[in-house]
Amino acid sequence: MLWVGRLGHRLYEECGHHKLPAVQHVTAVFCSASVLVSRCLVTTAFSTSSVPLSAVTAPPPITVSFEFFPPRTEKMHEQLWAAIERLAPLGPAFMSVTYGAGGSTRERTHDTVVRIQNEKHIQAAAHLTCVGATRAEIDAVARRYWEAGIRHVVALRGDPPEGEAVYRPHPNGYAFASDLVAGLKRVADFEISVAGYPDVHPEALSAAADLDNLKRKIDAGASRVITNLFMDTDVFRRYRDRAAAAGVKVPIVPGLMPVTNFANISKFAQKNGVSVPRWLGELFVGLDEDPETRKLIAATVAAQQVQTLVKDGVSLFHFYTMNRADLTFAICHLLGLRANGHTPAAPGQG
Ligand SMILES: Cc1cc2nc3c(=O)[nH]c(=O)nc-3n(C[C@H](O)[C@H](O)[C@H](O)COP(=O)(O)OP(=O)(O)OC[C@H]3O[C@@H](n4cnc5c(N)ncnc54)[C@H](O)[C@@H]3O)c2cc1C
Image (tube, rainbow, N blue to C red; front, side, top):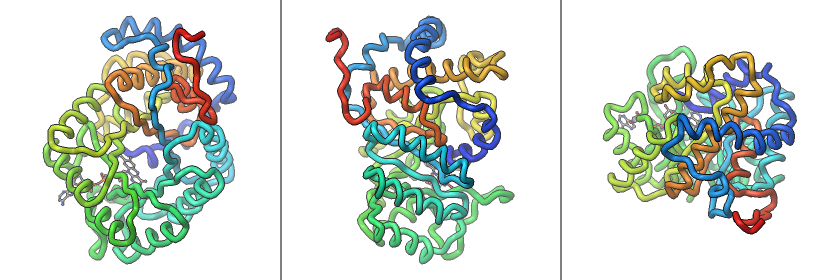
């Protein structure tokens, strides 16, 4: 299944050579140029949902969270912490750190989570999966988090390890995420977030079965759903409506990842059942060797996406940062968030 942690690792490796300009530069370019780019785009792909950007820069009750993956090398470590330093002043509700397939990042995830909470004084959430571990082992990981002061877990089933096509529960493990949620609640009263799939999880028998599973996770104790990456805003809206109709009452938080390397992401997306609208691909045609323009387009697409969602009443956003701050910071700025809680003037107040 596509998940951005693994995608993050892979994309980092595949796209790492596309060096990003300094954050301030990107933000400045974004703020001025994206308006121009968006004027063009709004009249084409987004014509049905456009409202002035000023509508989004009003101070809204917006809450964001940021997801990172644990670094493997010293260089990745530096990049991660530069991103955390840049994004922390925006006051996210929490920062979460992914868990490598089969617990491969257990220590790195633990260290990063605890450090975020202790040094940045921001709630940190630890991702935890069922794959390749007994219930006793997973409970021990959870207990260690609780003892370290971590109160929020993103509880996941996990994907089959590399080289295995089909997921097989560990004989003495938690079989599915709903079992893990219940197990975690037995360990301690964690706040628990779980995964949701606007495009439907590829192993689900049907969209309805997928929603039943979501409800099992909530009944077991989850209090928030964070969605998998989606590329079509309407897919998210329909999912949210279907979930509400099925009786899901906890917040469904859209998981957003600004698309900068369209070719890579769409390859992953198509392989994993995430629908890719044609217009999105067309925006990136001819830009394979032009990362600067790709980034402007990505920022504009993401700005339009959050704009549409805000208009729709969404006030919680989860960002798959890929351990990079620039685009996420810019989009949060557009959402009205300012470093250290400074509130921007409302439109019309100069
Ligand atoms: C926000 C987010 C964060 C993620 N973070 C990570 C991470 O840190 N590490 C990682 O390895 N992966 C991560 N993933 C990926 C996730 O592990 C995969 O998408 C995985 O394939 C499914 O996980 P799940 O928790 O949704 O599984 P589940 O909710 O258990 O569902 C998995 C599938 O099994 C089906 N199912 C559930 N219960 C049953 C049952 N009793 N009988 C039959 N079928 C059933 C469901 O319908 C679904 O198709 C993340 C995904 C998201 C969206």
